[in-house]
Length: 155
View 1: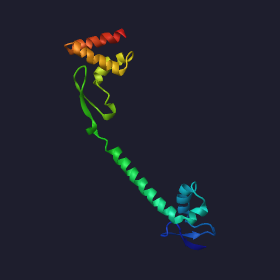
View 2 (view 1 turned 180 degrees about the vertical axis):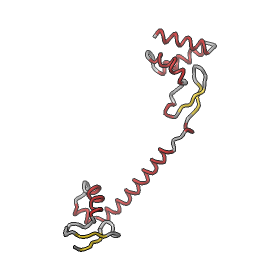
View 3 (view 1 turned 30 degrees about the horizontal axis):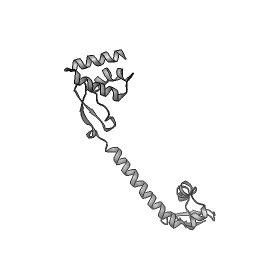
View 4 (view 1 turned 45 degrees about the horizontal axis):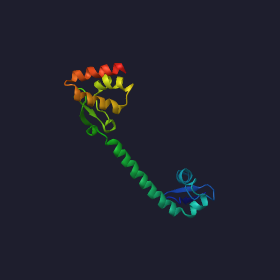
């Protein structure tokens, strides 16, 4: 048996086990050719253009690393500063919403008491318009709440 240098990575050597076709060490053969290039090119073409394959592999690996790192950074930067404070349309209480919940216009308590019962028969836009219209008519929050309960029961 003779010692050969791996054609993919000249920095390491391997024992030639008599396989004349073997130009790569077993690790590079499996990790590089079999796992990555086998579905793209034939073995002979791969060996003939190995310098081009190394160059392409280097750039693709760099891009892959760059995007993975940036995706991880973006995923880890999500924090509570993204929350915004809002006032409930019914009770005027303050509550926080995230960008994903920007559509919310009621606090959790009012949503459970008034929104969900009304949701059985109306769309979200209709409920919001109803609340805004009733706020113009009624002077107090209690009157508004009573009217919403009455409308929900009628539905």
